[in-house]
Image (cartoon, rainbow, N blue to C red; front, side):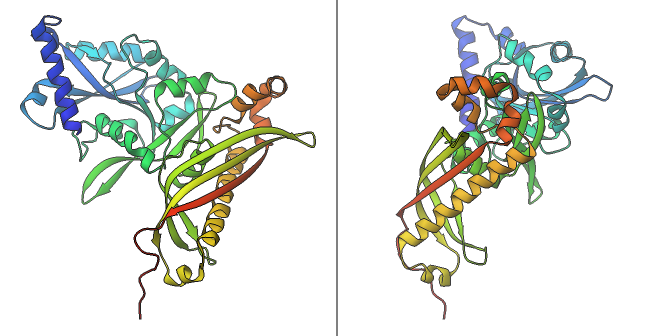
Length: 381
């Protein structure tokens, strides 16, 4: 699929040249930037930028399309971009960029100075995906040759389009990231990206969330915790729920078919409270232990247990973020702003602290809609 998209894009450029909008020499004089990695430079105050450039000539000769990796350091992104143009002798074409990867070091120092250029540049797109690298550098990730596609940034974009079926990382485009940085009632976040190696083949994978306060990364949550964060935000679209037995071991796997989360700010006994109600439809996908399957003598019992565990996990990640990071990635502040404007005026100036002390109540309902082709587990004798 990715190969077809890339070849179609390159063909479109050449078609435009034939119709007279561009001539061939103009096409030959541009560098199509697919992805960008941003690290700290070796010298004080410098940044190091790695760009992944689509090789249009190579792409027309072979499949998958070719790529080039260039790295340059400088004081500003604008300066570095101009430096790359000087090296390649070609104009940088940003409108088909798919990924920006930040190193953790850059993210923790503050991201406004490194993404402001992207927001201002007239040729860039606002739907590019943003990531924070779990590796030492962003360059390591953006330079990978992916298994599914030689152009890493395009493979990452495809991965994010499929992420809704897994729900272990948030899907964040740069426009949304910048919007959250500017908002007073919701904090920004970005998916974590790392290098996965299997059979000596390296691949970029996403799992977990980087949490920001103002424009600085303050911490992370795991892929599993991210799933329950997405439940709280009504952004869950797929994935798997597990239900444990009495010993705490996984006994059932439930496929998430659909979910609806409603969040409501209320006053209870003079205290502000967030009430979260989730209703999730699932299918019984896998039974881990026959004994536990036989002990559950009705669908209602399993639904009740699944609902209880889900609400505990949602509440657990909310409490963790409140305690460890004081960063409202759940958007509670925005809801208060919309529905209780007078209350918001009183709490907005110190929302980080107010959020960390906010009372939250979660109620979860799980409905099993299907259970595969059989109602019995495989038995051993």
